[in-house]
Image 1 (cartoon, rainbow, N blue to C red):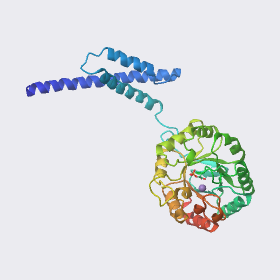
Image 2: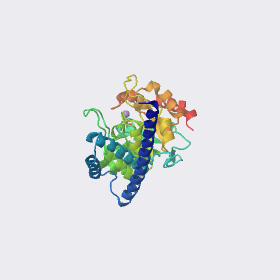
Image 3: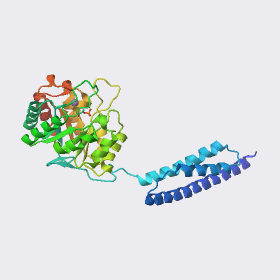
Length: 355
Ligand code: PEP
Ligand code: MN
């Protein structure tokens, strides 16, 4: 075969490639139109029966040299690419995305603005243990200018034999103390069944790391008319974190505060690995406020101040920290809860970072 002949055959091949591309483009345009019609009448984009019919029709016309399986495989790729095109067309951007909403979402709870220019501190005991304990913790918060009181009543514990929380009684205690001291109260619920009590006693509902992908709870949070703190899952990727928030927004509740609380890695020096990079990523890619839980991410009191500073410097809208009036006797997370002196030191250290 002469070099001339090879050149000519290659040029024919180039022409066929272009024709194939033009045909695929034409096909994609028709598929997009079909997608629009389907969206209007409300039918599903993907129709496996129709796809199978198309494939079998092509196979019946196959004269070789490709095997039937190869023909199926090649066309399946083309079908999938066209289908993906419809997907990106219909769900181009998530509601959490900054491309959809350019301005920062500010969650206003009784005058405290989360996500605005001021930075906030959420603090309080890991678990609500008694009225006296919560009242003492709240007084320390108040003395340090902190109004956002957290405390767990429904505790998602790793072991079923560990203290499980006081349940509704815990929420009642939080509400009572918050009303007495004009504070804002945040607590976790672990199932959609607790929505009703949450509305009765809380100002902000927390969805914990273990429930970030509890989709029924996320849907219930989306139907709630209350701000939600959504914590990142133990091993959740940033995309999964975004989609969890999307569940809430997609049901009409855009009052979502994200919370980075560390993810599980091989590192054992800290309880989890605080993913500081999630803060600027979530700030630039979503419009939602984000806070950092410096207690559960580190599990260590001795590095709470630098990690809190780092979080705020990286753009976090606030931090969450556990404080107990007497940590050694705490019923959960005793090692990581700050005592009153340590909490005051943290607040003083963060003053330059708070606005
Ligand atoms: C908590 O904040 O009480 C808690 C249990 O945290 P996480 O869900 O992040 O583990
Ligand atoms: Mn805890």
